[in-house]
Amino acid sequence: MNPSSATTLEPPRFETSSARLIAGVRESYAFSDQRFKQGIPAQWQRLVAVIGQIPGVSAVAYGLCFDMFGDEPGFDYVAGTEAAAVTGLPEGISHLQLPALTCAVFAHRLHASQFNQTMDAIMREWLPTSGYQLMGGDGAPDLIERYGGGFDPQTGLGDMELWLPVRRA
Image (tube, rainbow, N blue to C red; front, side, top):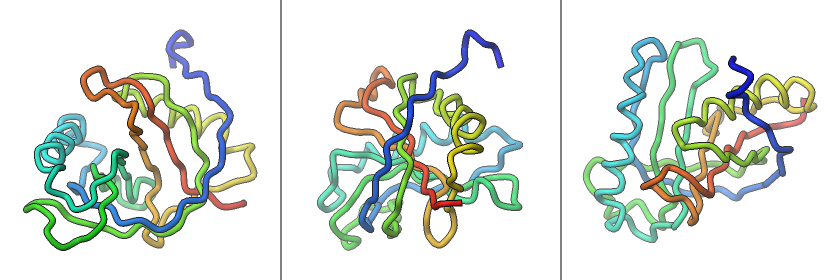
């Protein structure tokens, strides 16, 4: 890694979230084909086009990554938002129930397209000495990108966090 592009990792805070219903667009990707570089932004565009039709939509959006560390060389990505109900979801919008989670929460101060830099710093610097391990499985995502009300989709900056479901090692 180029030292000038290294990410300064801030210490995490820990959050325990309740179970929540997420409505969004889900796709599967292989790491090898790099299709996710265009596919994930397209998922967000599909969600934004119908977000006003999702019952009880939240001001917070989530990018959920599943199966990133499994035996298969790929992952599922959900571009979604919290919803109040599954009835009446627009065509092409699926839903999933996130379980209650304890997460290590890291601020992301770079552009949204650079989450991988913060994630790399977490995996290299924080996780090995943290006393925690990634939770994953049992309906929990491996990684949650959280876009708060201060996120600006035009600039790709502001109010972004990486939430890692964890448990004590």
